[in-house]
Image 1 (spheres, rainbow, N blue to C red):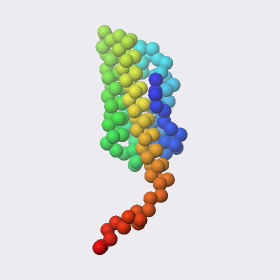
Image 2 (image 1 turned 90 degrees about the vertical axis):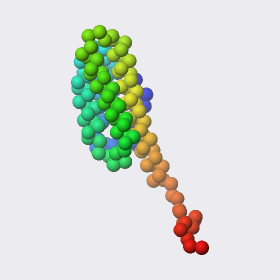
Image 3 (image 1 turned 180 degrees about the vertical axis):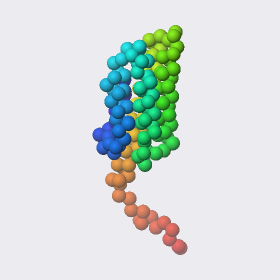
Length: 139
C-alpha cells in the first residue's frame, strides 16, 4: 500500500517530471495487485522506471541530497526485488515483504516532495519585513 500520495499542490509543481508520474502509475495500478510471481517478473521494468525517475529529476527545489537519498533507497529496494527473481528458494511471503518495503520507500519519496512544496508555499505566503529589527545598523 502506498501510504502517502502526492499532494495536488506538489503535483502541479512537478508536472514536467514525466518519469515520476510513469513510476507512480505503474506502482499504484500494477504493483498493488500483483502476485509474487508477477511482481518478480515485472521487477526489471520496475528498476528501469525507478532509474528513469531518478535520472530525470531536474526540478531545482528537489535537487537535494535528501531527495536523492530517497530515490537511491527506492532504487536499492527495486534492485533487491529484481535479485529475488534469481533466488529459487524465495517464498511469496518474502516477495510480498520486499514489495511492501518498496512501496513504503515510494511513500517516503512522496512525503519528501509534499514537504518541500509545502515549505515553498509557506515561504511564499509569509510576508516578513526584516527592516523592523534594525540589523546591521551602526551604533
